[in-house]
Length: 75
Image 1 (cartoon, helix red, strand yellow):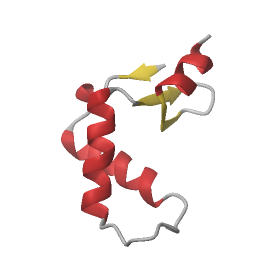
Image 2 (tube, helix red, strand yellow):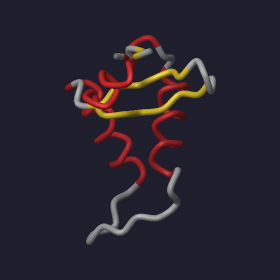
Image 3 (cartoon, helix red, strand yellow):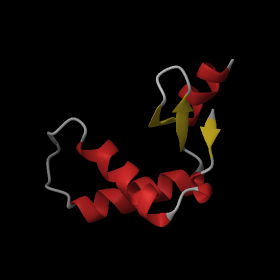
């Protein structure tokens, strides 16, 4: 189920985005990007609907997926 990001409190959204960004624990980009910058990039992608927040009732977990992947899961 896709959850509109606007329905989350700002603290919940911030925590979800930070957890998503730091999940892998490594960043292999050419330039170091601050956590704040990455959070803002994710927020912009959410606003553009490039990515969405998804709740999986089977695992009772929340994640961030591309809109396309989320739509495929809902089918």
